[in-house]
Amino acid sequence: MTTGEKIAALRRAQGLSQEALGEKLGLSRQAVSKWEADQAVPTMDNLLELGRLFSVPVDTLLRPDEPLPGSRPPEDVKLSAEGLKISYTPILTRKTKWFIIMLALLMWASVLGNIYAMARVHELEEQLAALQMHAQAQDTSDTVQQESVEEDALSGYDVAYDLKYNENKTLTTMLALSLSARPKELNPDTEIPKFTIQSAGESWTCAAILQQDNSYVGSTEIPMRDAFTVYLTLTDKETGAVRNLLLETVSGVEEEFKIRWDYLWAREGDKIVLDGCTIREENGSTSISGTIGAYFYQLFLSEDSLVRCYPVSARLILRQGDTELKSAAWTTPEYDAKTGHYNTQCTVDWMVNVPQAELELVMEYTDNYGRVKERVISVDRIKTTVP
Image (cartoon, rainbow, N blue to C red):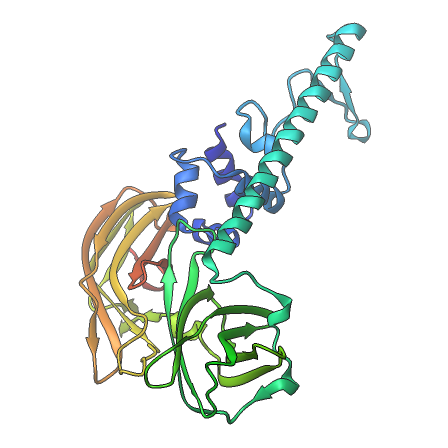
């Protein structure tokens, strides 16, 4: 078996979808799909995580001749009925056995050494990438003590943020912050300014630049956090005394970048349909025809009354296991100001020679930050069996 086939077999054995496995690894479903199709090879870090999730050695995933746990025993293994004891037919001489054992030990030592070296290199690369993405490295000296905070020392401030998403980076989801603050007491000649951002014991800083209107401005990126607090930190050049001026504590950030959606059902007699959409099974074949509609809701608005996160495109996919049998594009999602929803629909007329029980109907959508999400649509709820 190839590495991709082994990953697919282990994932199905644990009842995981490609999306579910991707979420556990912090990756997209497409990345998992490429592995399983042998179009791409997981990094050593991902191989180590796969081995931990599936409780198998990395060597088992990499070597085509290495069987998965639970595979049938070799032909030279005999199972006796009494106590299910295992006996092996002796086919090797003592010297040959010892030679093979020593060779195997040397190979394992080499593999383990390579794995450790690769893991260490990858760890150092991730640390370097994290340092490059921060405006400044985290420093425990930047931790703001609550007793040093001045909560009414600003005449004005602004904390603006937006999502930055890049599936090719180690940290795929970042918050881009734009900050401004105008102190009531301004001492630019004697104080060193900077902005300090804190969240759950973590701390980041960025430069604060004085403007002509006597306000300080700054910008930086931090990893996605659901809540964080921003301060303008002013340090006296001579004494080192620190003033921490509170701007704002922001919470509920992650909810502003989530999209919820559902699909609409109607009932006709004892048959459940969706705008005329029906799914029928006859003689082992399944047909899907009609129009299915979906709506996206609970969309958060920014301060300028624009939706912060919204769908831009969607696909309806029919799968058998990991194989994509059919797909069709939904209409471009349109915003309805009356309901606050984005609405879309898709019309299909499909016939596949596969029983309905083996099929999975999925909606896949892409949001305005390039993130791809999917959700399974219940086929059982609209199934109509033809005698």
